[in-house]
Length: 154
Image (tube, rainbow, N blue to C red; front, side, top):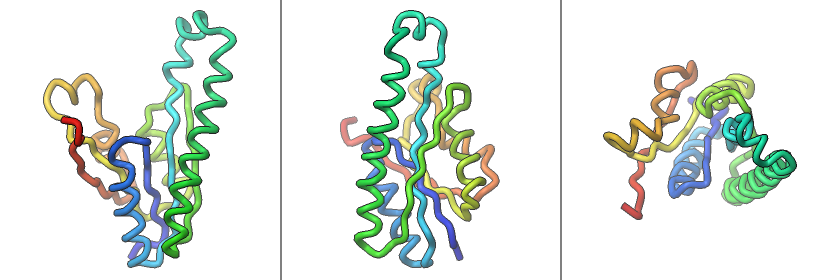
């Protein structure tokens, strides 16, 4: 069925649930797994931020990459511990929306399936926060599995 599954993770309360769903599918199908994290640098690219923090933007970007790499390495170890062939990918952009970065990463890696979490935001909160999952549903050319979750703090 699936040979290449990409799972997008974001260090939220959904990470374990989304990763677990992707690992289970990879186990059942024998698929390879790519664990992907998108670093959204759009806020750092804004002129006002660069002017306020001229010496810190590069350092902040480097810290984000290091943190993301360590996070992804831990998740890949979890997948490998149960026999799933896993690799990690970090995507980043100062101009693209997270959903666009994930679509490009899935196409580049030739994923059969993209697994993402949806935070279950509704109403005005969703309007202001936006939804990467919703954008993926509209734009992705690859099959998409949405893992729904509710914030345990709500």
